[in-house]
Length: 188
Length: 164
Image (tube, rainbow over all chains, first blue to last red; front, top):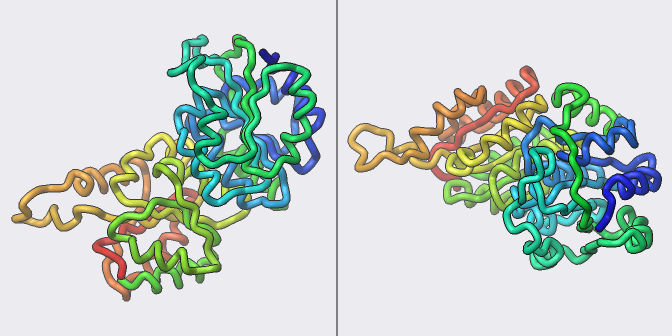
């Protein structure tokens, strides 16, 4: 199992200055402690399950930037169709990271449906995603870190992470303000 | 209504992407859009995704419209609220009005996709107009873009009948 905090630190250190990162749920606050750029967007106080498709839209509009979305397993399950949608009009610059811990972490670690039985890599492949990697060890993570930024998208990485106890994320500002600030950063 | 007129007006407004799900009423509209090189059509698996993808496109600097039917619109509540609406994005929607005729007096049955539709639009703070004839296309669609821009919020044009 991976320690998500270590993974996030390494991802933040490797992240390029023009890369855009969309986070959701239990990753949003830890990411905000590692990275403060106008190209970060916490999909918080938004619609659960719709972080990945939102990030995919950004990737389509901004083909010269890498767009990464860190999505929980519970959020991914809420909108599984997105695994298919992202293959219909592929965005070579889009990376979806599914952080799999088997629980709804911010509401108290209740199990997600199918915890321990769902095969996210298999579902992504069956949906038509060709670049899919499941990562369970630190050594494998280190070996594949660059791929998160270079693999032809849509690329899906499943991080098997240890359970933690993140609280419900609190947005830094109203979502309207944050969305328009991101637009300004992306289009300026 | 001629699908080509709708496509021409979308191009005139500078639309870059259409995000949505085809339905019977908009079949020819989607066929015309797929044939149109200047606009990219993004098909989604469920209508709620349309608002999230369109919101990402708009935040990224593109100009998307959402085209879905009222049945699918009724599925989109939290996605609409949490993305396009709460983000304050001027996204225009063209929505098929399934069952419109069933609300006329004497109809054999009432389609709840129709009777639930306009009350839901009002509850969700979505201004809308109805479009049913060729000579309404330009005015209604351009008006929706103006309304969306003025409020920095989504607005809608409801398509009565089928496009040809």
